[in-house]
Amino acid sequence: MKHFISTENITKEQLEKLFELANKIKADPKKYAEALKGKIVATLFFEPSTRTRMSFESAILRLGADLISTENARENASSTKGESLEDTIKVVSGYADTIVMRHFEDDSAKRAGAVSFVPVINAGAGGAEHPTQALLDVFTLRTKKKSLDGLSVAIMGDLKYGRTAHSFIKLLSLYKNITVFGYSVKGLELGEEYITFLKKRGVKYIPVSSFDLLPRDVDAIYQTRIQKERFGFEGLDTTLVDFGKFCIDKSALKSLSKDTLIMHPLPRDGEIDPAVDTDPRCVYFEQAQNGVYTRMALLLTMVNN
Picture 1: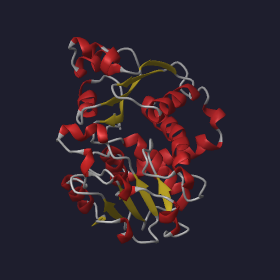
Picture 2: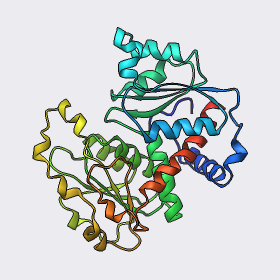
Picture 3: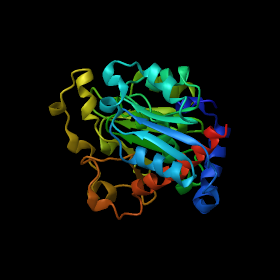
Picture 4: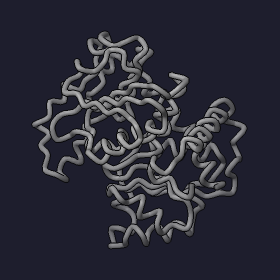
């Protein structure tokens, strides 16, 4: 695996090895404190980020690697002078052993991987994919459910621009007998390319039009934020979306099985009531913590090839 651009680029065997390593790191992180000593990792973020950037930088430092970084590359990098993404990547790949990049264009990670001399890790590309988020999501689900085969998962919210949901369901498709329920509103439904992909992988995809139509015993609900910042790309009007339809509150939780997990890639914007945070089924903050361990495992694998 030269680059980690998409969750389509990883096999089930590679994924299980990453999870095995992440579990070892989680159990004894100090053992890996100098695993990447002498290596340099560059983080290039052309879009805002808190969890992804900081968890990657935490992972880099916890592995003993050195970090070079630009946080607001859209404003602060040479792209403001007209430099192409390809030229930026060619230059930066001469400075570092691996590049972690977030960018606002859907094809950015693929373009970066095509010209980089070192591994590129996609930390979010437009509305397309966010593969490292999917790693921590599926790792968390596997930790809680023990086995991923035969699971039923509901994805809610913005399924059109929600790149985290796109990568999540692609990764789940590596397992057997997966059922995915999709709950959104008109204009924000899951794209046909993803539905076709799931079908080819043998995943059963069932769109639903309301929360009440989801099975009460679904194994997990993957809630997502409405990506308001991307609406301008196709002229969608945020006033036409009833965001209250997607809110998980105490009443919604009460209707679900005691074994239904509530997941969210964060940040949230009203779609999960903070009043439910202490419910043991709500695992989104644990997801965020697992991001450090899975990204440490990924960096170890990519930097050391």
